[in-house]
View 1 (tube, rainbow, N blue to C red):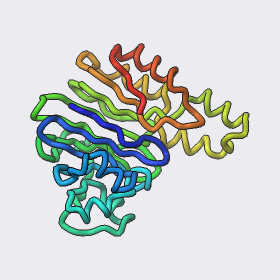
View 2: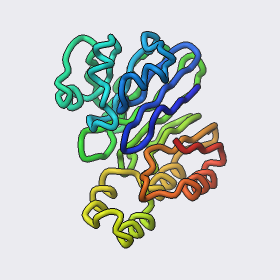
View 3: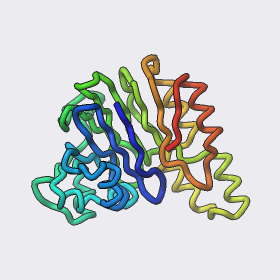
View 4: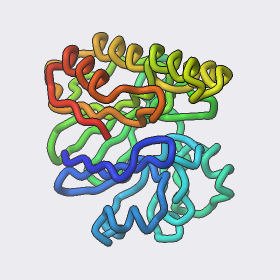
Length: 239
């Protein structure tokens, strides 16, 4: 799979996933023109956009994608927040119920299983299988932990927003208010929680891990990369 990060962070998130046969978008929290440029002005080739949740840094261009005729897959909460409707609005929920797989979505040559994440609004992650490459990718962001284990992982795109040490230093230095700490720890993934999650999954087939949505004030790129490499033993990229 080819993974291209157009933006990652609190100002916007959007990624392009291509398996040589199909192209999909993961979140669309940046201007539509930036997405068009990232797609080399071939937006018409996109098989669909998967939106994790309604916050604008993940959903900014939902209405513009719909106007362009792109199928957008998101929770009802996203479409209500955007006041969006129409045949390109594909309302989805978690594909897992009591640990059992209920259904897959089909976007071109990609099969997608949504799963619930834990944020302050309804939020989904995506386990994605390419029938073209026979590879699997796990994508999640804006969640403080992941409930499930996933088989045969080749790529992981995971939020690593903060470390507790960095938050405490930011508070001590006056860069962030102490009240922000509670929201962060209850709605975003820390590097320690990510490392624990990775240790519980089988990473024997992992090829690359992409760290997403790092906080400007509360993260350390080199430290986060080192910690993940020690656990996964693969290439790690900071987006």
